[in-house]
Image (cartoon, rainbow, N blue to C red):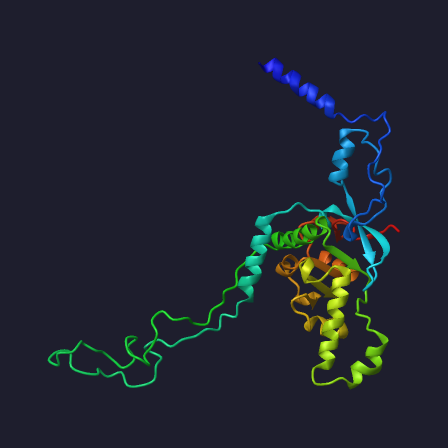
Length: 319
């Protein structure tokens, strides 16, 4: 029985074996395209694999992954860079992402809720009526939690809800969130200075003379059209724009279409923001700074020539 099973397995593998001697043909007449986030020239994409090792390497890159740099808002490819797999190609770790999101939420809570106990309520603390002889229930002071206006039992008091998380774990969660977006083709990197270009009539008329909500309506309609054309709107899962500092027109336009997405600067972004929306559009300098701030687990404590040994090299331009 075992021999029969092995024979069937051998026949099945022989039927599925890829032959490297026969030229492969493609059934698609149209040009092969890739997603914007990982767009790069790939040679011999339609040829058969030479070995099993080449197939593994094609799906699991060894050292670097390609990142296309686009112009904004046209999203036309401008250059190609290589980034380390330790930065943008980490496997999905839901446990790390959960720890990071909970950690950020706990440290965001204000913890300012406060209530008065029976000892904090103003008024006399004398006994309201005799203990016995009235036929009514025994009653203490006016500050009793049983009476209206009295203190609150076990009420909230100002406290710190913040929790702690290992820095290396938090930094790896950051890069895991970026890798998740990259692997899904939802991380779009643009050149620095990302700003929304407005039509000529806006600068001449709308920006100066439209009032009473007409200017905001103009921005809302224009931004909705731009996002819909680029495939970044609500139908595609909303979009998060991340810039190094505030860009007035981009931020003002995104404030008019909150259902389509939002725009944040680098200081206001956390792991939860990277996971909430459908796509993430950020500047190249923002990505570089994110990686520099969150790679403590990649930096060795070994000193070489008096300096600590750094992690993998950041993005290197290829084209």
